[in-house]
Figure 1 (cartoon, one colour):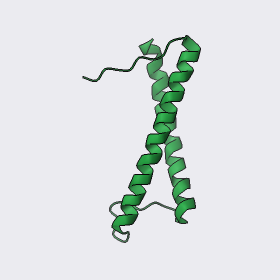
Figure 2 (cartoon, helix red, strand yellow):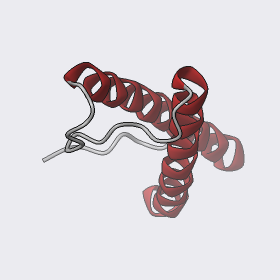
Figure 3 (cartoon, rainbow, N blue to C red):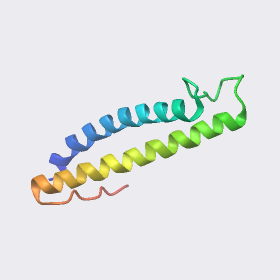
Figure 4 (spheres, helix red, strand yellow):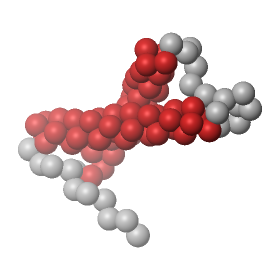
Length: 90
């Protein structure tokens, strides 16, 4: 079953990354009124702006990743009747 789950998981990760990027940029635009979030190497932006953007981006990406991973696992269980096993890290 692990072999069946891996392509689904990979596709979900790619889609999740795209969704997270769009969500972050929209959130930043609505929250700050600025078109683009500050880049760490942008000399004209303050430390607080850069760190705030990084923290918000990390939270959005982490939340979307959890949502997508859980959704993919739930969908896999509905389709196959088994929950995908957690991979062992070496």
